[in-house]
Amino acid sequence: MSADLGFIEHCAHWHIAELQREAANDRLASLASGPGRPWRSQIAAWLYAIADRLDGNARRVIPANA
Image 1: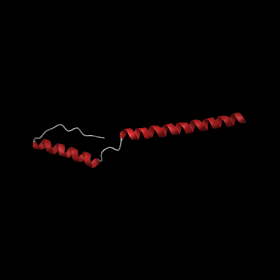
Image 2: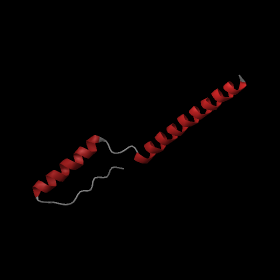
Image 3: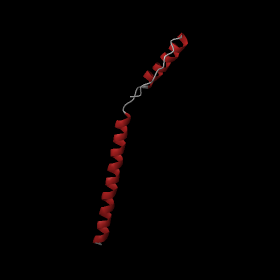
Image 4: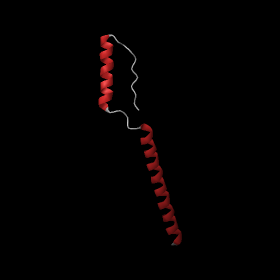
């Protein structure tokens, strides 16, 4: 019976460790992607770029996502 309890305890520790690894990966992914720019500012940047192009002031606009 003690072998079964040891196996159950081992599985529980393994499962907890797996959950902690997943949480750490999710945390790192959210830190890497950052908060980003709000949609309003991205749309505004595109609208300004279109307006500049229509006015003849064509310049290359590189949207910043960070």
